[in-house]
Amino acid sequence: MLRLLLLTLFYVHSALAENVVISEVLPAGTLIKQLKLGGHIIYMRHSITNRDQKDTNRLDLDDCSGQRNLSEVGVQQANNIGAAIRSLNIPFSDILSSPYCRCRDTAKLTFGEIRIEPNLQFSISKNEQESKRLGDRLYLMMMETKVSAKNIAFVGHTSNLKDGLGIWPKPEGAMAVFQKQKKSLVYKGMIKPDDWPDDKYKSL
Image (cartoon, rainbow, N blue to C red; front, side, top):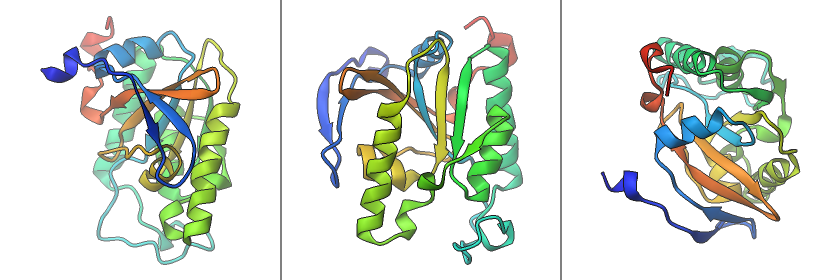
C-alpha cells in the first residue's frame, strides 16, 4: 500500500487561523508503536453515535436526553479501543473531554478518569467567530502541553480539529496523532478504530 511507504513533509495552514501544523504521515501500526513510548498528543473523535438523535439542548450539556449519544456499537467501539490501549500498556497522563455526553462517555470508556474542558464543546454549533476561537483554543491547548514519558488525549468533535488545525478526523472513533516540535505541531497520522490490534497482537 502507498500509505505504508508514505513519508511526506509539508506545511498545512488552518483555513481559519494561522496555526502551523507540519505533517509527517506514518502508518497506523507505526503510530501505535510510537504511542507506547509516550510524548504524543492525541485528538480522538467520539465513537459511533445514534444518528436518529439530534442535539436539541446545547445549553444544559449535563442533560444527555437532549443530545446525540453513543449507540450500542459506539459503546462497544470505545470499550474495544480502551482494551487495546491497556493491553499494549500505552501510557496517558491526562484526558480532556468535551462536555457533550457522547465525548464524555467515549473518554471514560476508552481512558478511564477524565477532565471536562468547556473549550472542547462542538464548534460547528457556534457562530463563525466562536468556532474560530474554539479551534484556535484547541491549538493553543495542544501547544501548552508538557512533553513527558506519557501521552495526552483530547476527546471531542470533528469540527474543532478542522477549525484549529485543518485536519478532519474520520470516521467516528478515529485518533489524530501529534507531537510538539519547537513552535509548531507535527501531525503524524490517523489511527482508525479498526487499526487497533486484538489481544493476540499485544506484542506489536
